[in-house]
Length: 258
Length: 185
Image (cartoon, rainbow over all chains, first blue to last red; front, side, top):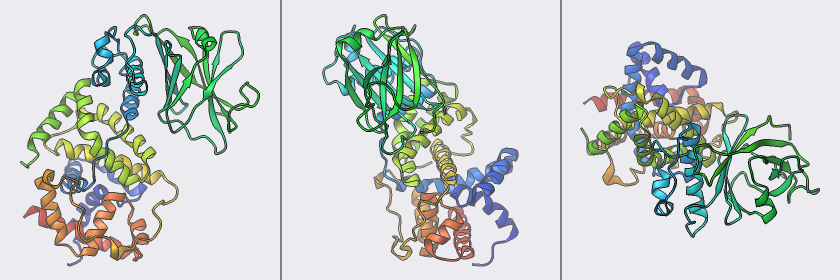
């Protein structure tokens, strides 16, 4: 091989960009060029065509179900839901794709999760609630769904910020005018199913709040939050949800230094 | 056209319907393409959590930017792969430390690619590329594959392969020019 010509060197920038060997500054420079020049964009597209078939060497791997839920949440695919008939409950695939026009996102997510984690399909008119815990960076930290008739809450991590080693997130219910009641420890990595006591279920309602705090292993030693509260929000009835359902929306607060 | 033209047509239709914010088409696009794209993210980032984050960002970008897809420039599969790889590379550049800093046993890397997981599904484009890669100096083709699959910079590749930076640049640039010539014939 001979030394590449000047013309080749110009063209090689796009090849190097597509291959991914440029550092951040050089990448940004090529990206500006592509945005400004259709010739540069065409050269970049041509190198993408040449090299991208290499991706076929990589084995496909199905991403976890929660990823699709997170994408739908981020894009606010939360339109209205039709009341669910009993047939629909058993149809996970339907729930999965229930964003089409009528699917209340939270309700669909809730139903899918309830279906996944509770083996017996619930009866159609079960009251349930769903919570989206959004962190300060806009990422959904957790999705919580509550099956009232079974007195259970399933808390699924979406993309929570990591918790400092030796600390654990704990979920609290705060009744209106009352003190926080521990719901249970949750995880930044795995779905957790929490049993809800009858008194706790009775306090779930439009005036109660939820909160997540960072606690020592095993949870707060005092029965009250001792660490920084990283998210909180009021329970609101979801206008788009079936009459039997309400939704929780958690509004995050700035995370304190842990 | 290639062996996967039917699938490609479908992906292109799904992408053009996504461009007009057809949620059903977007959901089907995700169903069809997310396993391959997730595999790519996991391979490049080496971390499943980060791979999920990058794929999430990528699909949000796909929803928002599908209108900018130009079928005259690239197949839908190429467009999607490129978008996801660029997101993964950007994420790699944000990392402070090179998490792949350990030197590679460069001579022990395979000369050939592993081949598509299901080789019968390999596109004609892939077969041509594989044939052209096979004509390169093995060190050069290994470097190209390593770069493609790990998103490493020239500098990182030189460190991993324990060769001078100028040598690595020379290997890859020659490989790219040879590939261009080979693919054009």
